[in-house]
Image (cartoon, rainbow, N blue to C red; front, side, top):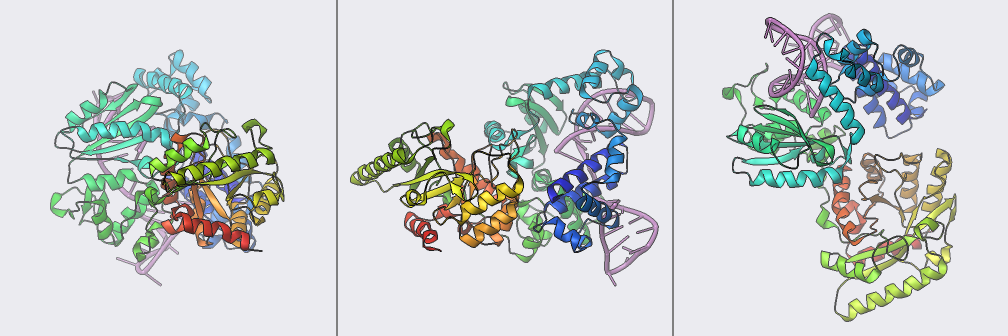
Length: 585
DNA sequence: GCCGTTTTCGGCCCGACTGTTTTCAGTCG
């Protein structure tokens, strides 16, 4: 059993214990352990075999035993007993807004409700409202929550959420009672998938801002509206929360509501270690909870809060408790890549396969956007569903691209369309085009598009073989995942990264909104191995050039700097680097 | 269930809002 599977089970144990009404700190211990396991860079199996679990912070005696049992036998008696003691449908009830462990336990104990369907029926029969601690309002809210859950996804792609948030943020900025405002939460941290949108505003007139926020005409509904916070359903069914604070409180509230929860816990602990107290209202010279302004350590910005806690400023993208504290304390946080460092994309499509624009249109549009180069890498012939290119068509495309480059040069336009292909990885060590054809092209991206059901070992082998081909520059969308749609195929990502390090192969950060991979959690490992990133749009239309911005956010989240990203290079250096791999044995 | 050089026991982040209560529990972030 690998670490992802172990982590998943630990999380589930935590949730089940919560439903049983266990001590919340105990349930959190399981979630913490799962995080620690997931973050491991070496195989869990090795750690267990060498009896080194105890070295991992957050894993004590009890969890060592359970994890060892899981890894060595693939089963865990404790987990199976726990699962058997509760109906399977109970877990899904947690997804209904307003329902937590306590209420679910009451529904189950008193009404025997153990699934969404049973819950809905109990509501319709009016049984829920009669329970102690419940009422008509709660019952109606549950029904509404179930309906909304059916109609809309509970999670949203970053890019969708951002396009909704951007409009509201602009309106808030323009409001006369708003002093400062920002997004917060997972959106500000640039998570690839987000649950809800958070806004923070500072104002001397909170009720005016709350009124404005809750009466926007585009809203689908209002969940809650108080003196300092409100929660609404915005377009696309995205829950959107607003918090209004005084301007003095703003930096503290911004840090607090940006999270992550795990990051905040460490921040508070650091404050306590310094005899201070940190909450969303301020940093106080006190060992007790307080809001006494006399005790406040004034900070005008988030930067100053970090400073008082002995840390350099941690960009929001890095606030995941994934190593940012050690780096911020030592002053070794990287200067993260910016989206306008990017000079082009090396994986894109045209009308030659399944794209929507001709090479010349693409070239002119990308030049207008300020790019220096843009690679056309259409599909190879095995991707027949995408109108993939065989050798004949590919050679014709090369001629067309050559002509386009010539025309642009004649007009004095300083821009280069690069030739290439997104070649299918068929089976291990077999690509969809022969090496001599690949050698005629500027950029080769190799991706898996078929045979997803092969096992982890076979998939890993396919990717490693592709990396070992001297003509392949980039491994495309590494696991083929589609966020909120389908899981990626199983691979041993660390082994693939190691192979890329050994062969000088680059790894793509595919910035298509539902791909966003290689996953940001793996980049620090790749960076440590010296593997370079290429932020690619995988554009099928000219407008997809905007994905570069999304890709840069994900790269930042993966701790990458300008130097780690190949397509920040000017054309001349890029061409040198492209030739470099072909010179290797 | 984890953790610890002031602690091996007693902490573990904490406040706003809702709805059900008639002073507070549960949920959420």
